[in-house]
Length: 113
Image (cartoon, rainbow, N blue to C red; front, top):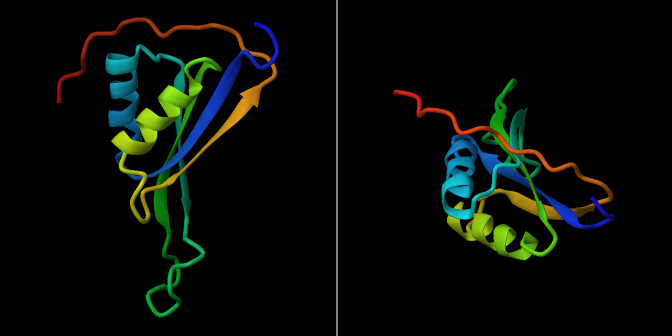
């Protein structure tokens, strides 16, 4: 694909937000080019009187590849639907991709809970 025809949207969420958002992106926006990773750490602004030795917070990282044409739409959808407009709602940013290959995940049967 041509240079800068796609964008990478990276979201750092509190735990348990990425998978529901991934499902909504697929169901509501037709986006199937996502991946999720996990991370641990402690926020820089967590007050030291609250911290204990070994404290960490789990985070989920959702990365979404979308066309440059739809990037603002998808960014806004994630930002507001994942409640990122509130304190500690997460971080989201977008970067251009120099090159991207089109791929799609197959439809899979729903997992039973």
